[in-house]
Image (cartoon, rainbow over all chains, first blue to last red; front, side):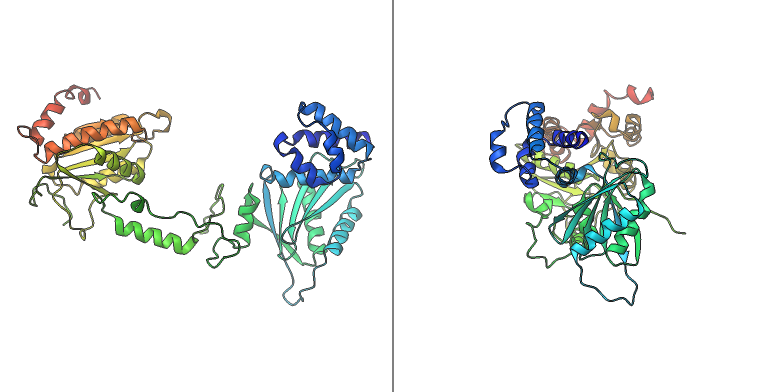
Length: 272
Length: 180
């Protein structure tokens, strides 16, 4: 196994907190159950990591396996990255093709490789017809930098893709182009949304927060009862009760009872 | 009727009503709860309002004491109180009105200077209390004081009137505003 791959695996495993270690390793599914049992998970983290890396070496882990582990780690810690949202669109007259995941993946990778020889692309399927793509960029003369990858989460049934913030902005046009062409769209536009919380972005973009008839996915509706009800002391009279109830009603009508997406900051543009 | 007058209604039998005016709903509610927990011979009623003038649709009893609650962390709450003061008849300020400033404990969050509120209270010749309503212990103590004050303002304590109490409270404060 290559030195760099071993080092990469070691650093990735070191990032994982001890409480999540077992879960992530099981999700990775590279080291079989019986081998994991032989490792002592109660020792200090550095020694544990060394044991795990030795096991990986014996199984001859490749860069592809290491990249998969990195994707899984990021999926568990998605709030550590800042996500942007891209929206793609087709030409108005075009038909809706059947989406083929394998074709998308191979096409995406081919486009990237054609432009840039030194690039590592990895895929991992997720729920709701989504695919997590990890891209490690290199240059013409340098191997890809595995420690600064870009992640793209593409929901195949929608025209939306979420990308993690990338310092190397020069590769963004290439990435956008690859996404657009591989998914059979015509245009791609960056939306004015950015957040650490992928679920909130999803809720806003897929308009999931306003669905009042959401029965399958509905968590318990918020305890939206007015404070008035909880302190039913009749000796306290709220002078503005009618106004308060009106505000409460309007808010409930607009936003519904379900948990709202998390808003980190809002930017307003004044158009004169 | 847009101006509150202290004596325009008949008093209820053994009833004392206090009106808390302020933008901080949660704090007012907690203060009201603390007040009602106190042992009191009179029947207490607490009215909570965001600002004055009060909506005229509510049938309310005579108000014996108004407490204006200002949150020192918020300029908006100060402005709200200043505007509400216009809708109170001058005779209320003969002992039946008081100011309560909250949030002085967290100096770094204060956007209203202490002197501003002191000057306001001095302009209206009314007592000013500083109390961090968020802290349980201070709030309970404040509630006790307010209940006693309310009883006096409602006339339930023989021998002491609201005006009496005002002059008693004032004598310890006469020097402070002059130094501003």
